[in-house]
Image 1 (cartoon, rainbow, N blue to C red):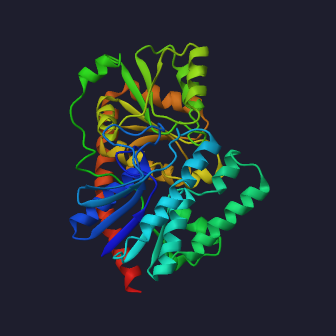
Image 2: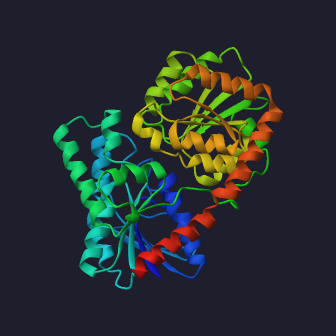
Length: 407
């Protein structure tokens, strides 16, 4: 097959959307298929062009056999709703221009959110008379409403209408969780048009290596129990509960919290940590995935956190699969499907979101029991190998696309 993928985010950008598309596309190329990506010049989440890339309106690149079409967009950091919306909207014109140049594509796949990649792919697929597959990684705009990001009822209704139009237009919808599938089905979409291909981990890449003692020392973490959070620092992650837990562990001077990433809440979290003199909390900027792997290697405990909200119970943070693949024990402030996965894996301790006392107790327990940490880490790796290998998930995804094209 000749598959064209529309995604605003792509490597070397960091984060789950870019990594999912890259690792999946690479597997498809290895199996003999042609894959092209319509994306932006890398700038997320900093709002600055990545080193090694030159600004241009349009450029074609190739990486691991994947043909990459990059279009200039409005660069903005991952904070501020208006500026981020402008950044998302600026992807649409270039995506449409590029999409109509892809004359040989058999099928168009778009990953959402944001909606603009899906809008471009749906328009082009309709005019070309080829299948359109919509991948849903996040439930927009429902989560906006629950987190209070958007309160205007008219705007929410407009976004919901846009969302439903894309669902109805798609020949097939691919979700990353079973809960998402149920949610979309309740919106009136036939279940046979919805499939679930979850996130997973590239087991060859996410593999525990050196203890990274030199990096530990450089970060001031020598001889400390490192509790690591890596990822977006936004409203949905509810990271204030980690600072609450750090407050409760101030008496344990050997325990250090290392928070790495970017997001709209980062500055507020930093101000609070400074105001409360939380010397056991260290913030660092977002890093590339190779450095993330090094950070996992030096960590003793990994944290996954989401805010307490009904819709967030349907989310599965993709980083849990990377952490388990790296044989790291997880303390998870999660509920719903993701909590069930971690409990089933035996790779971590689950605490209800918002329960800072429970998070602190779990960290204290694991800090005192290194053998238990090793046992949980090994169980997590075995679970990912059995159920969430990116290679196997890419194969299942490919079978689904072949079936869609066959229709």
